[in-house]
Length: 86
Image (cartoon, rainbow, N blue to C red; front, side):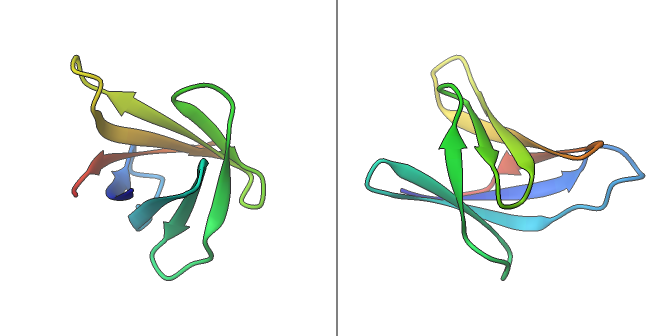
């Protein structure tokens, strides 16, 4: 699975991260922001993950059919929303 999420600011005080690539390897998910480091995403529930190395939390948002349409990244006091682009 290779998914690209485009992250944009949730508010004007928080800069966007650009492209976040989500990949799976076996039963693990990984996130990589742009050219940044690829980090493992640890599941907390079906749609919520933590990224301990980055101190971030990621929540996937699904539509009525169960397809991921967007995500929310929480890092410190910032919340960034992004839509799925691929």
